[in-house]
Image 1: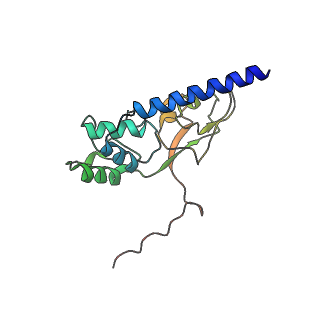
Image 2: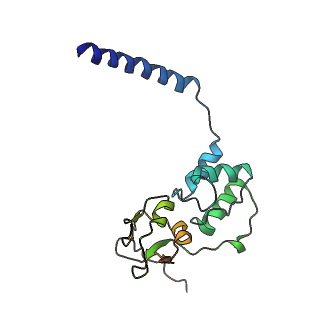
Image 3: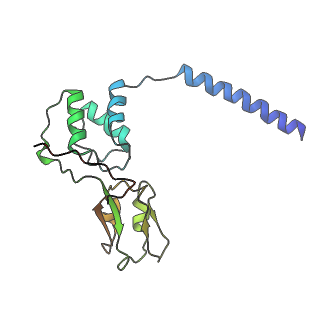
Length: 175
């Protein structure tokens, strides 16, 4: 027993040192502009832009493969800040800025098919087969994947309701 434990300890230590050496030796520097654009993005990794997460979208925007307006959750404010950062000209007339939204399940018509659960990128939908589903507010990014996938149209997107936890005092109107 002692031989097995000591041999696995030595093996783990040797492999750990080799992995540490390899990570320092073969380290690849990334583009700092891509990292800056990625930090500007919402970080929900919802996939609405058609890229695998915010890192993929940031790399595509910096590389010129995607427009600065490709992030729907970011809206017009994000598109303007990315365009200012990269020195791009953008047309904001095509950008819809609906604000933050959440998926809501209409319980009367939910049949519990579980199709929405399979496409949710953040696992925000709870429920089982042939059971009514529910959406976790804190986990939902409002991407709309579940809305497109629901066969009974039981899921819809609604604006985030203002509660005491999420309420922000509005700026006073200028006279």
